[in-house]
Image (cartoon, rainbow, N blue to C red; front, side):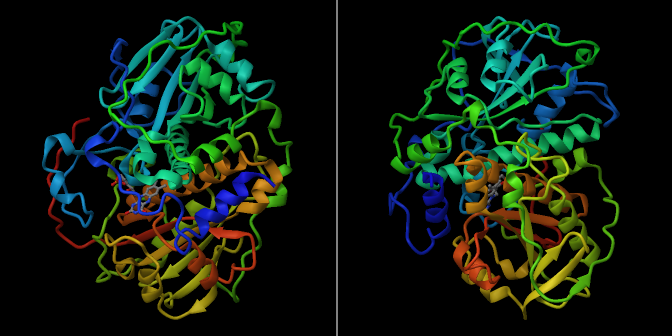
Length: 516
Ligand SMILES: Cc1cc2nc3c(=O)[nH]c(=O)nc-3n(C[C@H](O)[C@H](O)[C@H](O)COP(=O)(O)O)c2cc1C
């Protein structure tokens, strides 16, 4: 049994047995940047994204990729609305401004670095580029076709024929300066949330994004020129590029090259955390460990528990498209108001969309079983009795697990003070059979679980926004209490996130400040 089992268990119990370093206090004055900074590299502006809304596209083009990056990790506006987070007083100061992005991120830290290995036949001089979210530009880090190096790291199988790849890495310090040992858990979900934004966005254009999670990670760290123990390479995304379908890519050979530019760290002191180093090492990718098709079947979500099915209404068509919902999405942070109940149709839409969400990696079969189950704590939903339910996706129904209003339980088991969970209409909870996933595909499966839950979180946000509801997801809760409440304590099913859905107070104090 690998170390990831121990890490998963420590994360689950951290509300009762604090993880080291206990009493850690971040040094906010010496915090890292929210994106990498390569002072020596030239930044090329990305073109204006395509206008006129989504339309079917035969493959990615530069304007399409520009749009996808802008709507996911690019800065789209400034967050100035009054909410209940502790950083509120800082927001009007430009140096501490919060910028909105299409993708949610734990702690608003956005630790995922996006690299583009551009091969021959594309719009750019072949090379390796880093996406600079604050400039919405590309920094050229290396000139020359290195797609052969990416293919070699992937090994035979998925992504072999592509000419353009996105590579996603996480420089842990960007998150661990705040979350220390917990960091790995959060960033693996950040990766899932970003990939899911892309999957939703690309789907609107008839394009498919399928992340590859198993590859020779250390080779790619060498290509990116990053310290392999400080940074994890989490996913490679082969892009369907316009024109590629005409014939196989020329297939440049591996070069063995690596980026020589180094990103300039802002923090004067960078701390290492033993637990983080261990879980990073345990989950390090190797192409040879790629799970066999069907390996994950053994970790399939259990059939839903609970009482007789209570049917839900059919989910209505969302009044807003997915790309518009990415713009409208934001966290409610304390603004929920139980004065207006959520409708059963709105809850049905959130449940159905979240249940249909998959990470879409090479480890899953396209018609394979889901890894996640969903539960819902109903506070204020029209026509549904308050209580704790399991969602049955096949029946599109709720099954009662615990009757009665869950508000006091929810609030008692939330660690932060920025939400009154009782004021949300409902709280959805994805679970994963953590041990079963790790047993089925090895320790790297921890990153797959993060990708699965992060994807559900991002779907949740966009679905809520599309249906005119507020939303907020949170990791700051006592997982064990939730497992006990839902009757999962003796199983390997772990509640991994809480997702709050509801109306917000009317006429919020805000200031519109779109920049893109
Ligand atoms: C994996 C993950 C974990 C999160 N955990 C929390 C949390 O514990 N508490 C909270 O208030 N928000 C949490 N959030 C929401 C983020 O704080 C939020 O997405 C970020 O600050 C950006 O704000 P926005 O969602 O309004 O764009 C989480 C988001 C993600 C993706």
